[in-house]
Each structure stands twice: as C-alpha cells, then as structure tokens.
Length: 419
Image (cartoon, rainbow, N blue to C red; front, side, top):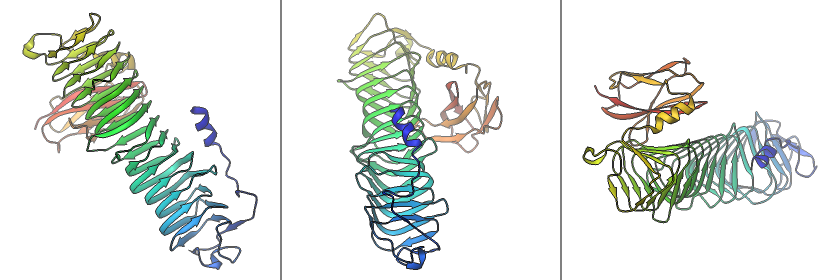
C-alpha cells in the first residue's frame, strides 16, 4: 500500500499521452474559438491540450483520447457535463458542472490545483488528489481515490463501492447507503447526522464522525464520534472517544489492545457480542453485558449503580476472571503517561469566560473543545508552546471535552462551563 502511494507521488508530468504535438492556449477565450489556441484551430477529442489561460467551454465536453493538462495559470470552466477518458494533469483550476472520469490506466492527477464540480463519478483507478477537490453534491467512487499529503477532498455526499486512501485531509458531510471503504492516515471528518453504515474503516490518523454503524473498524490512531455500533469487528491499539453510546452487536467482537483505550464520557456501553483485549475502557453511564467479556481488560464504570463499587451495572452474560474493574478513570491517566502528556491541566473548572490549558511539553497540533454531541465548539490558539486559552463565554452551560493533540499522543480532559 505504501509503495503504491509513493510511486504515484513521483509520476513525471509528461507533455503528451502518445508523443503527438500539444496544442497550447495563447489567450483568454472559449474552447470553440480558434484564436484561443496556438494552432488557430479548435482542439478535437484526439488532441493533447495544455491550458495556461482562462478557457471557457459551453455545452458537453467529451475528451476520451489525447491528454488534458491545466497549468498553474490555467483555468477551465465548463458550465455543462464533462466526460474525461484521457490523461488529465491539473496544476490550475477546473470548475465543472458535472464530471465523469472513465475507467482506464491513464493518470488523473490533481497537483496543487483545484477541481470543483457539482457531481463527480470516478471509474478511473488511482485517481490522485494532491490539491483541492470538491463536490457540492454527490461524489460516486467506484474504484480507488488516493489523497496525497497536500491534498484535500470535500464531498457533500459520498457514495459508491470503491476505496478512499487518505494521507491528507478529507471532509464528508453525508454518506450514502453504499459508501466506499476508508483508509485514513491523515485527517478525516464525516459530519453524518444520521446513523450511516460503513463497510470498512482502517484508521492510523485522526478521524471524527457523528454517528456510525461499522462492519469492520481497525483503529491505531485517534477517533472521536457521538454514537457507534460495531457490527462485525473492532481491533487496534489507538484511542477512541464515543461521546454517547457504544454498542457491540451480537455477532461482533471488539478487541481493545494496550495502550489503546475507549472512553464514553456521557453515554452507555452495551455488549451483546464479545469484548476482549488488554486495553482500557471508561464509561460514564450504564454498563451492560449480555455477551462475553474476556482478556485482561480494565473496565472503569465511573457511575456504578447504587454506589456499589467496581463492576457492571447490568450483567446477563459471561465475564472472565482476568478482567479488572475500577470506579475511577485510570484509562486516560495511563494513556497520558505513555504520551508524555500527564502534566496537561485545565483551569478554572468549572469555567465562565475562558479555559486555560497548561502543561504542554510536546509539539501541539490541535487544541479543541467538543460538546457531548461530538461537535467542535471552540479551539485554542497554538501561539504558545506551554499553554493556550479557549474562549467559552458564548457557550451554553454544560459538560464539554477538551482534546489536546500533540506529536506524542492525545489528552482528553472533561470540562464544565457554568456562567
């Protein structure tokens, strides 16, 4: 997977697809004007075209042969449907009403440019984004899309049975009933306000979602979300915060491996399948087991029923004797120690106008404040290496979570706003 990614990064930008002469733009104009081009002609489907000016096209644009390149100063505007089956290299700007990228082996690469369209359908293998790519409606992915380290993809609706491999940043506002597999090594946000079913997620970066029902989830990075239902499997040694409810389905196995942990700061844990591993789980509300708990897990029920001490609130299943229980959240404490972030503190708590975050010893990437629905409500500036101030004067009273992401790991601290 990594070799495949690296090879795409260093593909040379060739001048043509088959060695023929390239038609260059020489002035601003329309595609259909001969004086827009150095050949004083209108490029055909077979020609290789290089655009380094503002060129507009009116009506459907179908280019299945030759090549299409947009230079750093180039802009292509098409106010109708665009179908591309040729090689495409973009360093400039493309505004397209609709985009269909046909199957084939010719490269489609967006390097530091921008491609923006209403809808897009990708049937081309190794569709490469190392610039900006955005759709205001649906993006259908039927093959694989690779987002490079400087790439950003923004899709209002994501659909298709393909695969997204993200090394940059990706923002999705809704998932269709059929959604692509996801491999995330960078930053990805999925703002789905309905519970969406996702086939497969591999996360080694930072991933945030609202609601999700996942067949298979492997997490060796950081995940935050509101509600999660595991349908088949969860594995990994990363950390995950589920702000409300986490359910393990009857046919599912969830394995939390050390030093990984799962924290549920304002919701319930329901186990209908198998929960195992040697990591840690902390739950604020109800803990219910109707399945099997095994391994050397540490489970911290922070509000045990009736104050009866460590254990579960409801148990109709099986619990291995090797499982440990606690009533204090030692999960984040152990993770903070591993991450070298144990000295991070917040004050005052409760807070009225601001929250001071102090004690940061590692390089800080992000300081964020989330509400109990998993929504980011505020951020702290990164102007100081040891402390930051999060403004909360305009936030309603309630419980929040401060998340500090450093090069060494993530620290999560509960905060209360009270005016």
